[in-house]
Structure formats: structure tokens, C-alpha cells
Length: 511
Image 1 (tube, rainbow, N blue to C red):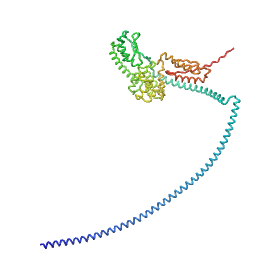
Image 2 (image 1 turned 60 degrees about the horizontal axis):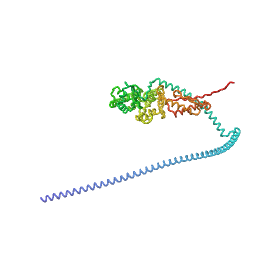
Image 3 (image 1 turned 30 degrees about the vertical axis):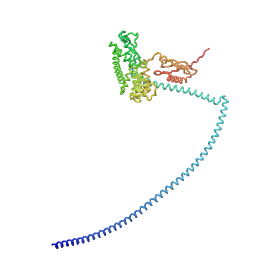
Image 4 (image 1 turned 90 degrees about the vertical axis):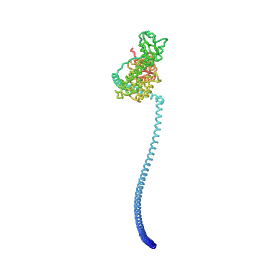
């Protein structure tokens, strides 16, 4: 058994050895074939590389040849252009040389002519000097004296001609302007006519009997003191039968006092507590009236989107007067007149009406705020966001500021027109007389005036000129000079006509 096993092992080992030897022979054969294949591939690659190398060298030589050819062509073209430019420059230099030569010749000619002219001028100056000396000997005047006489004569002639021309132009312009203005103003007034009611700074409250005066005064004057303290208005109780006078510059407070006193008289119970109750009730009533009047004014004029505070301020103007004229009615009238005239002239009627209605808005609080009603109005309109056009038109209605639009000019015209209507305004006799005297004094202190007369309630001044000092042409300048002095030295409503007269008399006697 062991022998059998050993034989099997030996046989197995021999088989393995034989198989190993056979496999190794086949592997070596494969390796040899692979090496030969690799060598063949390397040879093929080397041949291909050599071929590509030759092709690239050939292509590079061809490209270099082409580039060289293009470069040579470009160089030849640039050389040709440079040669052409050089030829042009040479031609321009030759042309410039010729021009310079011509200019030098001309300069030389000019120099010769200039020397000749200077010589001639010197000769002429000498001749003029000799002639002037001969003229001075003949006339007996020096050169400066003769020049002064000549200038005076020329000035007189020019002034005469200018005065005639100005008078003709002013007459023509005035005629056309007056005709057109009358048409526009007449049309506006015909389309709008308003009543005027004169008002004062006092109110009169009627009493049922004189016994009521004692009740109003109260024990030791406590009732009248309470009324005056709560309203800020003075009560004047005098010998006037069955009447009490309320005096005060604030028209709203005066109206509150009037309503309160009327309610107290009707109620019959007059004591400090009742007075306070009636004053508060009257204040509310007046506030409602103010609001309603402001709304009514805006509705009547057709002005919308006003700030509520501006509407209230308009309503306060119901109780404000200017020279006796109710300011709210005046503002409504100015708005209508300005709007109508703006429509006739092709301007903006809405802007004219709005500015006309608000032009005196500053008078609503001018008793409470420092400044003129124009400056107060500017601040109010800007505060409540009115447009610059409305502010400018309002600001210039008294000439405090220059108008920036035609609508602003119309506001000033409508304001003067409303104030100048007969019966619209009045002033105290003392103020009226002082204004007339000042008007005549301004005219009388002007050189060339013999005497003057203020007529037409101060709306016209007639001036008699001195005939020996002022000629017919100079009266135009005299009238203008006096007009300017009146504008700068005198305050007046509307406008003043300056009428200058010159009288020449020729007297002789038959013997």
C-alpha cells in the first residue's frame, strides 16, 4: 500500500513538473512575440514622427515665405506713401514761402501807407488848429465856450423835439389804453354790481328803556366790568336815550359783545354768571357765522379747495372794515372784477378770482399779529400751502412787491377800482384835509410851478406853470416830475391825475 501511495505521489510530482515545463515554454514564446510586436510599433511610430516632422518643416517654410512676401509688399506700399507725403510737404513749403513773401510785401506797403497817413494827419491837425485859432479870433469865443454854446443849443432842440414826441406818443398811447381799459372795466362793472354798506368801529345796542342802563351797570359797576373784561370791548353808557354804545377796534369781539348784550336784555337776568354764559354762547354763535360767511363767499366767487382755516379767516373779514368799507364784500367784489377782466384779456380767471378773494386775508388778524396786512397775508398763504402764483398776486396788490404776472396787475387794478367806486370808502375830515394840503404842498415846492389846486376830492391836481420859466414842451417833464414826487411822498387810494397848465398872454394897447 505504501508503495502504491509513493508511486502515486511520484507520478503526481512528475506530472506537475511536466505541466510547469510546458507552460513556461508557452509563456516564453508569448513574451517573445509581444516584444517583437512592440518593436514593430516603435519603428512605425518613429517613421510616422519623421514624416510629420518633414511635413511641418515644409509648411513652416511655406508660411515664412508667405509672411516675408506680405511684409515686403507692405514695406513697398508704406515707402510709396511716405514718398508721396514728402512731395506734398515740399509743395506746401514752397506755397508757404510764396505767401510769406507776399505778406512781407503787403506789410511793407501798409507801413508806407501808414507813414503817409500819419504825415497827412499831422498836416490836418495843424490846419485845424490854425482854423480854430482864426475862428476864435473872429467869433470872440474860446473853443470850450463855443462848444458849450453849441451843446446848449443842441440840448434845447433835443428837449423840444423830445417833449413834442413824448407828448404825441403819450397822447396816442393814453387814448388807446383808456379806450381799451374803459371797455374792459365797463364790461366788468356791468356784469358785476355790488351794494356798499358803510360800517364803523362802534356798535349801538337799543334798550327798551333807560332803566335798563342801571341794570347793565350793576351794583357798584360789577356787571359792566364783567362784560368789558369777558369781551374786551368798552361799553359807553351816556345821556343817549335808550341806547348803549360798544366801542372797540376788534370787530369780532365787538360783535360778540353786541350779541351778548342783546341776549342779556331779552333775558332780563343780568349778573356776572349769566353774563359769562351769554358771552360763551355768543362766541360759539359768532364762530358759526364766521364759518358760514367764509363758505358763502367762496361759493359765491367759485373758489374751491381752500384750507378750512383760510375759510374761517375770510369769514372774520365780515366784521372788518377799511375806510368804512366791509372787507369781505370788498374781497368778493375784487375777486369778481379780477376774474371778469382776466377772462376779457385771455388770462386765467380762476387764478385771478382766488388771488382777489385772498388779497386782504391778512386784515383778518392784523389786530393780533405784528406787521402789515400784506406781509401777514403772505405768511398765511404760505402756511396753508397756496401756490406761488396766488401769493405773488396777493403780495403786489399795494405795490409793496413787484408783480410777477399779469393776473397780479389785475388784482391791484380791481382792488383800486373797488375802493374808488363812489360811496365805497370814506375817511375822516381831518385826514382828508391833510392829504389835500400835502398834495398841494408837493406841487407848490416844485420848480416852475406858480400855484396848484387839489380838486375832485383829491383825485386830481391842477397846476399852473410859470410861463417865463417853463415852455410848452417842458410841461411834459414837469407833470412827470410831480407825479413821481406824489408817488414817493404821499399815500392815497386809487390814482391822482396831474394836470399841468401853461398860459401865455400877449397884451398891447391901441393909442
